[in-house]
Image 1 (cartoon, rainbow, N blue to C red):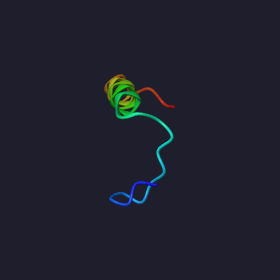
Image 2 (cartoon, one colour):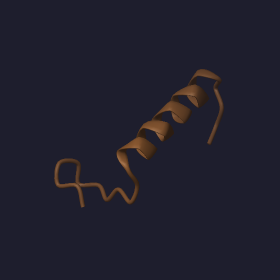
Image 3 (cartoon, helix red, strand yellow):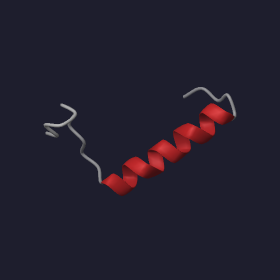
Amino acid sequence: MDKDTGLSVPFSLNDLNNYILLFSEGENQKCEF
């Protein structure tokens, strides 16, 4: 449990960065998840 955000993150920060990059690309391309 991350007490700063209150979110449970079962993945590494690197995976989180990769997800953010993919999400940003999807937003730029107007893709829906």
